[in-house]
Length: 322
Ligand SMILES: Nc1nc2c(ncn2[C@@H]2O[C@H](COP(=O)(O)OP(=O)(O)OP(=O)(O)O)[C@@H](O)[C@H]2O)c(=O)[nH]1
Ligand SMILES: [Mg+2]
Image (tube, rainbow, N blue to C red):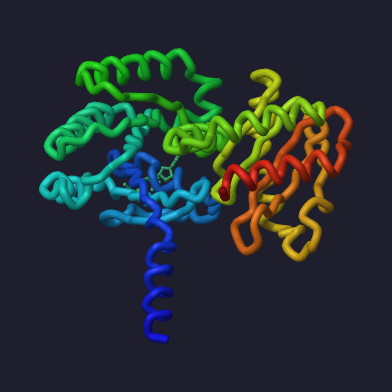
């Protein structure tokens, strides 16, 4: 009896799954740059953005991306906090795997300060002997601004890039973002997070094959945090149509929760005509009790075989959970 127990404990120990490794993503930049707004937009908490107050200190959240745990740190950017972070780099910057540095490009007078704090952050990474990729978000590049002041903004951006390049930090990347262009945020965050994920190529391949099989112009698969886990677009226009439509479908789905009680994960779908095209939206539950994924498909004629979707979902399940 005792021996049996011992054996089963040993067995249990052996079977214990390895602790999933957590990846730390750091959002930093000056106060009012828009860090918390970006994070809330991804959670589709749009109503909270309107009444946002400054973040006090470091706000942490853990979420799951493709089965990997992501620890997201939102470092409130008010001066007193910034001073505290720089005094204690081990507590705030240690272990950063990816850094997102947000700059408000509408606030021209504060750009020198934003660049100076960027250098302070680099300094901390250097002290800690880490070299995480830094994604600079040239943020608040709103669609209206793009229309009215494109030339001025473009030269401002060139100037910022020049100054950051002068730091000679190797892994520096840029995204132009705005919470009024939701697609710009999900595209940036999805690309950044997918870089952490070794299976992303396989997912992409599976999606391309599915798109071709059902004769679709474009397919996106999104997770519950509005992040694109894979996509296929026939061309740039299709890409724009699909990414721009994503918030519309997710918000619609949030308010209806229309498949929440459905037994059949392949039956219910929503077909919507937008911009003269047929969009098919579907919630896909790959595993019981885990967060759903969403499929948005652009297709001239809005029908496809249930079996095609079924085998596609099974392939995704294989990739994601095996
Ligand atoms: N025009 C415009 N305003 C934005 C955008 N993103 C955020 N904002 C506004 O910018 C202000 C500051 O946003 P926050 O998200 O609180 O900024 P933060 O970087 O988290 O600030 P701290 O928490 O103090 O570090 C808010 O009034 C937002 O509504 C954007 O893309 N365009
Ligand atoms: Mg904040």
